[in-house]
Length: 336
Image 1 (cartoon, rainbow, N blue to C red):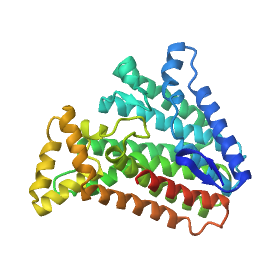
Image 2 (cartoon, rainbow, N blue to C red):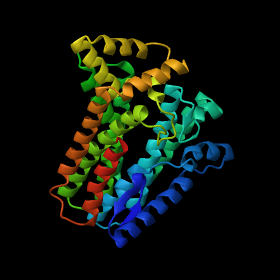
Image 3 (cartoon, one colour):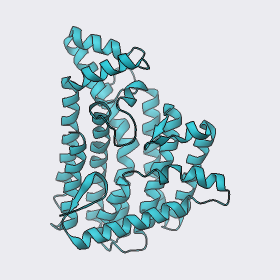
Image 4 (cartoon, rainbow, N blue to C red):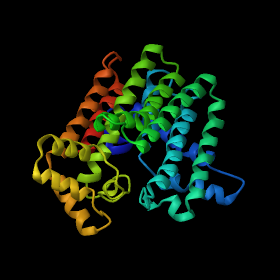
């Protein structure tokens, strides 16, 4: 058994491991090439997060999905570069909106160069992704445009908040489907499509990516509270401090409203307090880690991962399918 990709994903076949490793190495080269500019400062800013590393979760999915066709087809690596560039661009914008100070263990671009340059650098990455897409054909452009619309819609819905009478948890899951699920779905779709897989396989891997993307983000929600050292480079409780109501918090608020528990209501009041206060922040984290709401969020993560696994059933048994199933396990493992 070997290990490849994020989260220590196990791959049980040397040929598959070699294909995936070679593909990811080519993606890394493609990312550096795509973020070069004739203006040295733009290159520095555009490569800031590329060089900071990252899980490369989306390119990994492209490489595994491509195994159901020709993994060496010329569009596979460029499509993986496109999805990662798009993801990176959203991180530049997200950090501005969230006023984040760290990303992947380094200063965020907005802290280093200011909000305006961070936003413009994100735009530069979108432009470079579009250039690569233009060479992949109109269908690839249409798929990316539809996914990007979903992504931006998810961000708008998150910013606007749930409308009156809407269940906040349902609203939040819709937000995640747009912000995260859409691009992970495209990763599965591009890998299958660019490799020449049949339509049924493309459809399976698209739906798999959507569900896996949801599980991936929900695992991040759990990690933000439960982990001592966040894998994304953020410190624990970052979302709490920034006032972002992730799934564990939403479950807590729902329980407090349903039961009227004094302890739950008190914890909700603490969440509404000044979490820039380190002592208050630490106490909220301590209580949330022991609260049933966190375990409920873990169960939701498992549910989405299991849905992703079940979607794979029509695919032929092979090492690539086993790796995709293992990826479901790896995502759940992150959440404990």
